[in-house]
Every structure is written in C-alpha cells, then in structure tokens.
Amino acid sequence: MSLISALARLEAVEAGRAQPLATVRHRHLSERPLVLVPLTTAGEAGAPLGALVGSDPEEPRLLAVPQPRDRDLRSAFLAQLADAVLPHLESYADDVEPAERKETDPETGKRVTVQTELCADAPQLIVPSRAGVEYVRLLGRSMRFRRTAEQDPDAPYPAPPRVPLLGRWLTHYGERARVPGSSLLLAATDLLNRHWATGQSNLEDQHLGALLAWVDPPEAESGAEAALRAELARDSGGQLLCPPAGPATDPAFDNRLLAPAMERYDRARMALATAEDGAAADMRLGELTRAEREIRELLASQLRPTWRAVWRCIELLRELPEGPRADGRWTRDRWSFTGHRDRVRAGEPPQPRRDDAVTAAQKLATRETAQAQLDAQEALDDPLVMAGRRLAGEAFASEVTDVVMAWSESKRPSPRPLVTVRTNDRPHLGGDGGPGGDGDAADDGAGDGSSVGGNSAGRGTKVFRVLADGKSQTAEFVGREADGSLVLRLTDRMGRSKEPAEGSVPDKGDRIVWTLFEHEQRGGPKLPDPEETPWTHGGPPTTEPELPDVVTVEDVL
Image (cartoon, rainbow, N blue to C red):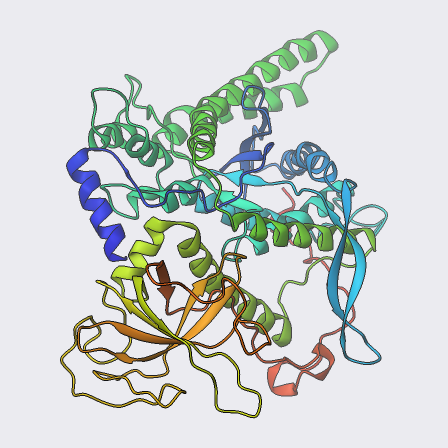
C-alpha cells in the first residue's frame, strides 16, 4: 500500500466516508455494458444456480436452475445464457473501421504496415466482484469443449452450437481480464477500490454492499455504520438485507429457503412422472410450475440487490471524467476483440487447456509490460496518483531556474542543454536522495567543458517529462548545486539541427514534473517460434485439437 493510499484510508475513517484515490476514471466504461450477476450452488464448484444478465438496468433477464444436480437443467441454463450474451457480443462484430497495424513479413522478416479493419467498439462485461471474474473463466473452460451433434453424432449429451461458442468468448474475456488495464471484463469492486479508499480492510472491500456504503453512504449515517449494516443486518426471517454479491449464496438462505423449495420441486417432478391419468398429470404439472416459480422468485430476491448495486457503481464512475490515456488502452481491447472475432470466423479450434511454453512466456511478458505501462499512464493522467509517486521518490515537481545551452562533442554536434531546476521533493537520484544534500563536491563534465559543483552521486540517472505533443523527453541527472538545485542534461526530442526545435527546451520559470520511470515500455527479448520449442519446455505444440473430457458415471444422474 502506498503512502497516499494509507493516508486516504485514515482520512476515510475520520470523515466517515470513502476518500478519492483518483481525480479521473482510469478504466473505460462502455455506453452499453453487459452486466452479469451469477449465482452458484454451495458445495459444488461451477454448478450454476441462476443469473441476472442484461444491458438495461430496468429490464434484466433472469436465468434459473431449479435443480442444479440435474444435468439437463444445467445444460438448458448454459443454452439460455448463450442466447442472452451472444447477440450482445455479435452486435459489435460487424461495425468496423479501417485501421493499420504492424506485422512481420514471413519472407523478409521485416515489420511492415498492413491495412486491415478494426471493430469500432467492443462489448464490455461487468460482474460484481473478482469471484465473478473467476466464475466467467470457469464457465468458459467448462463450455468451450462441449461437443455438438454436428461434431459428434454419438455424443450422449450434445450441446447446441452456441454453447461452445460462448465458452470460447468467455475464455477470451477471462484471459483478457488478467491483462492490467484491460476493460473488456471488469469487477465492480475493483473499479470502486481503484478510485476510492475506504476505512475498512482489503478483504472487506470485496463485499460490494459494504464498499458502496463507504463510497455512497446514506444521509445522516457514516460509512462504517452503513457498511456494518450491509454486512450483517437481517430481516425477521433471518435473511440478509444485503445478500452477498455472489457467486456464492448465504448459508442461511440455502438452508432455510432454497433447500426446502428444491425439495418441493423434486417431489412435484416425481409426482408428475408417476401420474396415472391426464387429470392427475395436469394437477401435478401445476404444482411443478408453482414450485419452479417459487425458486425463481427466491433467486431473484438474492440477485436484484446486487444488480442494483452494480449499476449504482457504474453511475458513480460515470461522474468521473475518463483519463486521457484510457482510450488508448481501450483501443488495444478493441484489437483483442477483433482478433478473437477473426479466429472464431476462421474456424480455428478453441483455446487449449494449457498454453505451450512460448505462448505462456509471451502472455507473462505482455502482462508485465502492460502493468508497467498502466502504472506510468495513471500517474501521467492523474495528479493525485502522481503525488503518490512523488512521495515514493519516483517523480519530482520542479521549477526551472536556469538553462545553459551545450552541445555534444562529436563531428556533428547535437544540442545537449543543461537545465537547472529547484524542487522540494526527494527523488531517488543518489546521494541523500533529497534537495540540499551536503555530499562532497565533485566535478562533472557537462559536455561544454563546464563543471557542476555539489553532490553528483547517481550521475547518469535518466528522468523523463511529457512534451506539449504528448511525447516523452529524456534527460540525465548531472549533479546537484550547492543550494540543492538539480542539474539535468536533455538528450533527445530536440530535432536534428544544431539548434533545438521550438518548445523542446524549457524556459526559465517553467514548472515541470519529471519522472524516474519511463513513459513508454520497451518490449522484451524475442522468443522462439512455438515449433522451435525445446524438449526441456514441452517440445513443439501438437496440431491435433483437444478432445473433451470422457463422460464418467458422475456426469450421468
């Protein structure tokens, strides 16, 4: 936890409501996000119990499984989920715009520009919590290898073609959620925690009701009181007034309400199966319908509060202006969506259960680069985030006190001006790490034969600033003056002529924020092709598509 976050939490405790951690919204929010609130059966991993899904806060679609142990009912639930989600995903697939991207020419090995198309927008999926994100991944893994009647006519339980297709999409969204800064699949709790600090623990912040109680407390009530009521308050029947955000349900709900309702449903279904004539069958069918309706109403009572909480979270986040660099990250999400759309349409097999060594290394490198890039962009977009980096010694705000022109000693001299700045921050530039250091005097060649007195420990450390055109300019730390001022040498972004381009060198009196972290992250080392994977790392990947798991006795009721 950063110092600025710890301070915000202390202020939240004192003020009785959450304190902002950001002045802008660091995640893209779609105009029409698809919200999914899932529920699962206790004691059986991945067994669906119900869900609310939709892009209209006033008209959600309720999906329910009256008996999760029935394989047919679970399969019907997955088919209904596909019917609800796939049209939303496919509505974005054909709205495209021309675009360019860099690709490697297979013949020459050089990077060339290719004209292609990019989806103008991408569907966004929002779930209540991190557990919901993991459940989306679990659903995708369990659905994408389902066999259809066309693929395997002898399959004992063939799935509709839309079920494995949705599994592939959910797997893609689940993988994309692991990329820092991606906004294709978001958790409402993570969105709130990124932008507000509460007075409770990180574990308590995963309770959506308690988290909203801190961010948006009722009038005449503190966040702590509202959060405690959201976590523990129950009605006269012993049921939580604010049900958990799922996918797990409250044990009191399971034992007192859901289990008896499922028993009545099972008895009604058994009675219908043993009916001896049409009149008895009609009466038993009515009992079965009432039992199923009761279960649906019970599940709706648990899902609706969370549904409203997720949309309230979206409303609160829309009040924040979007960060300038969030759109660039959303463009990468659009490329990701477009690429997966193309793979699906090309008839490629579903994602494998396990990545080969090269693919796994590429994913890890991509996520590491994305995390470093996200940290840098959030600081550049948000003064409050930058304040935390300044407190950590990773950036410093300064005022230019002097500029001395200098040039490199080469056949074609390039401008290397020396910029003297004054700062009250304590950046990690070596020495005592702060202004006004009392280190031993040292001389440092500045490129023009001059010298800089004072502590020059950390000489050569690179610092960066943002120019007016949004590009990053690099400077080197040269030394520290006797009065604590810092001397920096600009090294790039000044044009090719001997005289620096206009606006590339700061003027005396300019206030500049310098960072010790790069603004644009570099790529890692080139990895071998998957076909050249050594045997120590699993060897080349197989070209045969993976087969589904063998049906066992436990799969058949």
